[in-house]
Length: 389
Image 1 (cartoon, rainbow, N blue to C red):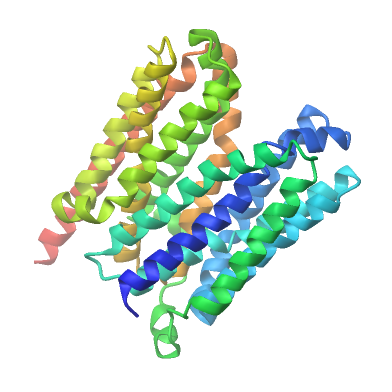
Image 2: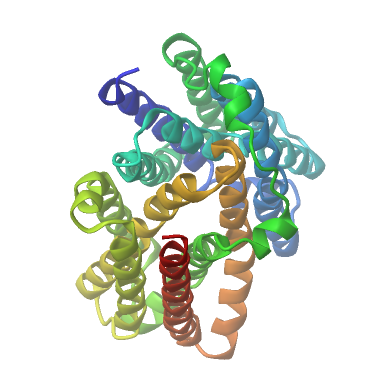
């Protein structure tokens, strides 16, 4: 299986998955409101999806270690498609909750299994390159999806959900016809090694890497939840302009993720992770000084670059060092990512209500704490290597 042939296929699959997911974002609040949702119920409706992913991602990762990547990826994409069609046909609020729960449970299979697939087909030298390409596809899909959804919302509120459902169905057909299984039968017994649990994850020396993923998800989702208010107050930026700013941030992040192979070979994951944390902290600090569109776009792009290089590097390191199967490892990593997306908006909103600068000051503090934790992790790793030799 040639890497250069498979990675573009995986890129297209994850791009289409995220386009389908992103299409519904602009319309969901209005759709839920039309069916009688209160602001609190809307918040729960959005959060319950991430909660399901937090719970079920490790299970799908373990299953992909046992039965193979392709069937689990297909289950995840089918789940997305099914949830979109249920959303499109919903006539009562409880149906929206059913759709979000089903979508969260089944689509939790997508990211960890695709990352495990990348780990299957890449050497350790090319691992970060593969993870970066998946990250870039995810980011680009998340940029174009909401833009497409916003356009089709003008037809009616149901149209974006139907489009998202059909995009997911097309992606499912693409996977069935084109993607080959990466976990061959002879490899399955070898790959299911150590069993992980939440207790073991927290006590494991690699726990720092999982918590790093939690940090980047927490900081990004907290920023996304509060920046619209902050930018409007500090620079008079409206919602349309804000969309362009987030698009620029996403493109900057995707561009650097697409370059992960070259960067990792030159500097190594450890250096890139530390640089990414420092750049994220710098981005948080600069955001406090925005005065206009240009400054906001540049400063968020800086944050996006820092935030963007961390995840592929963390994914790469974990799959190299974990003694569990790739799917199990990436499943727990996705779970930490979902946990950040659950806590981040709530924490960001609470901090913003106290003082509008607090979400960004806390981002700087969290960045510095993450850097200290990671330096301690690398120091312990070096000591273990020295003691073994």
